[in-house]
Amino acid sequence: MPDKSILILGCFDTKGEDFLFLRNCIVSQGEKVITMNTGVMGTTKEFLVDIESDQVALEGGYSIAALREAHDRGRAVDIMGRGAAKLAAKLVLQNKIKAAIGMGGGGGTYIALSAMQEIPLSIPKLCLSTLAAKDLSRQMGSKDITLMPSIVDVAGLNSISKLLIRRAAAAICAMSEITEEKGDTVAGTIAISMFGNTSACVNQCSELLRQQGYEVLAFHANGVGGKAMESLIREGCFDAVLDVTTTELADDLCGGICSAGPDRLNAASEMGIPQVVVPGCLDMVNFAQPDTVPAQYQSRELYNWAPDVTLMRTNKEENKILGERLAGKINRSPAPVTVVLPAKGISQVDAYGEVFYRPEINRVLFDAIKENTKTTIEVIETDMHINDPEFSAMLVRALLGMMGKRQE
Image (tube, rainbow, N blue to C red; front, top):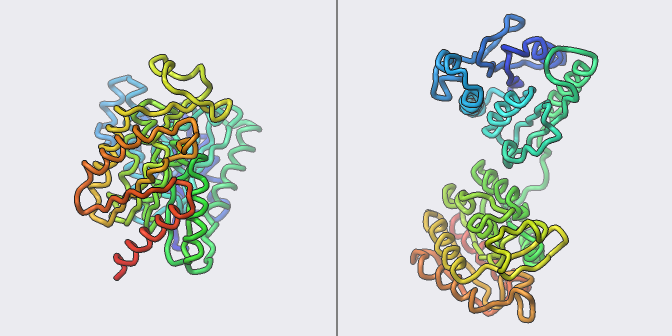
């Protein structure tokens, strides 16, 4: 491994003693460090600071003096988080870091996790935090960040904090030394999206692709999974995408709990890699227990998939919008794209005799896709159900055909 350092992120103005201990624990294991001060009110003389807070603030768009004068903690935390993220991204591009570690309370955790959003999967990330037991899903995003509870506040050394800081230092040093195993050579790596309602299709596609020598990574289309897939596509991890389950678009439209945000279905087009897209599970929006369904949807067609999962059948108006949005996203792609429409149903519960079987609503979706997709994109409608083995085989043939043409 090239001579790289472990990035230490933190507010050295108020927690200098704690970060000196962390730094010494890491250095004692033979590692080099890069220290970044994200504290607004000052710094520390206890150890060398490589990137000072004035530089972090400037990267966030403000001077450190302006942040101090404003006396607005929330704004300062946001600015320092943005600046730390930009500087972390630069260190990654410069190939200077092998791992990153941060620690702190609410503000320090927010800033450290913001910076870690710009650090790719190949680089381990750990945060020792007073908030580790809380829901930090928004701050964590789709990144592979390890959260470690600090138990006591990060506010001066004591027997408990020293023990946990030593463990955190040992963990990040050990993780930084893990290298990717060289496995068997694969023909390529493919991302595929799945849901319980499309599991049969995805399992069949995955098996067929593996038989052809491809590595297949499946992502659960529950919001977090979609975000993770989009993020890894942008990191260049995949040669193609088989987006069987685009249901997160419906949750984004209607405020469901499985939304991956408005960026879903953008990354493959931006990266210019082949993709086969299916409107899988666009017949449903996901909510939790029945009493969590918003009031405006209480009179809609609902189905309890599980005690904590309530599905709402999408209607014609929503399907028209979803078809237009899906088409608009894939129209941006410079690479080959194929859309495949299963006329006999787009989910397990959208099949003849099942609770969400509404072919007239699917027709609105399919027509909206066809009418709004640019002519260079092939749209195939087939008289199959999404979970039919023959449908899976069609998807795989389409994807491999596009990948073969791209490699010629």
